[in-house]
Image 1: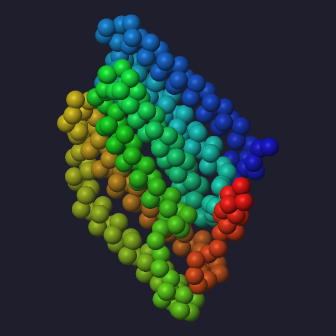
Image 2 (image 1 turned 30 degrees about the horizontal axis):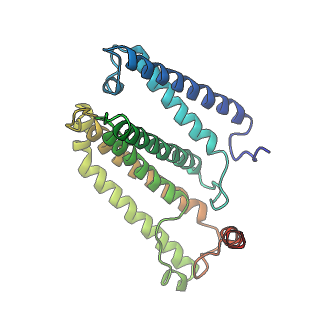
Length: 266
């Protein structure tokens, strides 16, 4: 039984088909590259994956993989989990899409490390790229997770003093918290923009054998993501402005309690 659509509506099936088709293309192209690597001496490898100029098949692989990840993220964001808050702010859908992409990227890290373990310990042929690729992906998972945590209001919050305030003072505290976050974002972007721009324009590399442009990509991404987190914080403040104030103590998650109870009974 198909779950109820959160926001895609009639576009749910087309997005699903795009995700399946692009994933199939990525798998087929990757299989062709692997088979070619086994039988052709100068076959394309991971070195060319970050240097696709002059290699159309590599461009097809990268484009299809990008479309597969994004379309899968969009499709998976069309439903929320049992312990997730439903999107309520003007920016929530975007953050949910980013969170699903982060989940997919975690699976990609597992696949990369599995490939490395098999290659190293079964065939005695360790890779030159698995560690760097894992670090590269993990950096974006960490950044995307921060945006998702803000959207879900799951970042660390201490309510001991907050709960004793009247509602107008709580709203004032929320505004002050947002102002501090915006000030931090401004300072970070102001101080890091020139360096991030320089690294991006020259595509600064990692200095290893595979030499991926991790610094040239991750440094600008940090600034972009902190801006997105700030936008999400503004969306949260607007969405929560007229809601009931937070009740003292931790909110009881009845669904999680029921799942724990069933696990103990089994």
